[in-house]
Length: 202
Image (cartoon, rainbow, N blue to C red; front, side, top):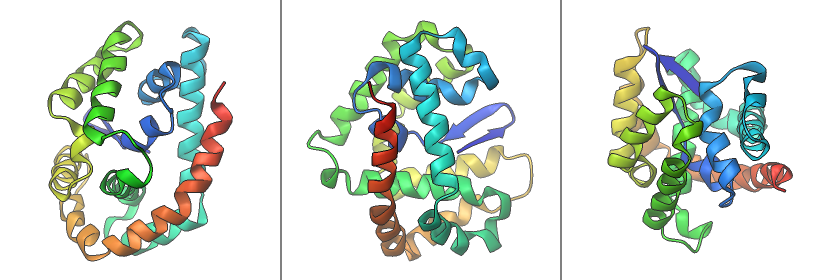
């Protein structure tokens, strides 16, 4: 899920990178996807194209899934059109907070590998994407999405940069209150998303 905030792009990164399973093209394409529109992805190498298509497919699969709707239903009355963005961020927390259930690689090490791949492929990234990468790697967003503190900072940033009045900065309280429900729904949903995402692997 992507939301434009004063020309800044904020999205959930951790799940997209995890579902790339170390494939360099999928990693780069997943990061690039929200900076390009339509068929512009065809201008990139084929292995990066697959990553863009995987990202778009993951977003559509997630946005229309019945289990994800359970998470969004608790948020919609308060956060309205920002609900999908918040639920995506919550699911990145659920993945990061339970990282050991999904990967044998330490989350810090995983994050470092992702940053290295993206920096090594900076020639494929538009200027705005390179700026985001600089912030992301410097502040280790991928790791901090596994903590309440990191999610709170992300939500505060979303709220501050949104074009319309919102209470996204308050959503950390909803995550803390419903964390068991969020993590349970994520655990039920994620295996289906993994199966779907694997169709984009070579």
